[in-house]
Length: 230
Image (cartoon, rainbow, N blue to C red; front, side):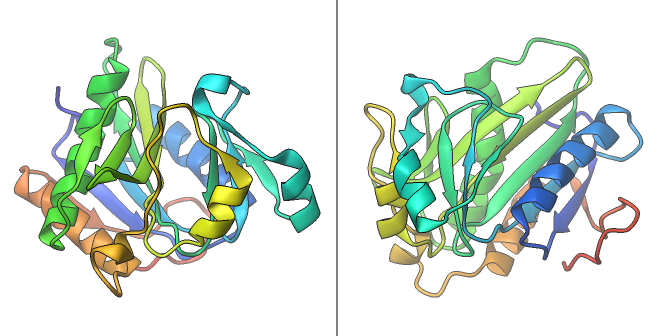
């Protein structure tokens, strides 16, 4: 399946780090793409320290240690996609794909696999051999470096994920309860010392171009938002 219906995709790198604003922006951009007010979009963004949970608690997705989060003062936010709980800090780069849909059923495995392809090819350009692992993660040498979640309507699809660059894994592992069978997590800095967000964004853009897409580096179109960087 082709994830993008069109050939032109906007690439945004948002410099804001407020979790509530970033999650609200996910909803805004989804609505804009769904209504065809704006073109299909890829967005990169980073949150300050927090936990972000899926819409419903489910043992198969894992959860978090609620008492510890409260004791440590780690804020908890809810996203509109499913799945478990993710630890965010400035060492975790989030990536989101907003694509139009023609109403067809999207197999989760195919959807996550197609979305992951650009990230895997981009990481390959940085010398990191990553692979998609069902149902919704990207691994490097048996270690989880990215987890994905999604939502869809008859007119739009959102796939977003984390990417551990140099996150606080000790705190992540203390706070998060992984689902059964989930491999241990790792930072990409383990394979690419000094890796930075801008390099990942550039490599992802090159992977999209190599697939035949026209990539447009643009500012966020939502009125009142701060200027974005390329």
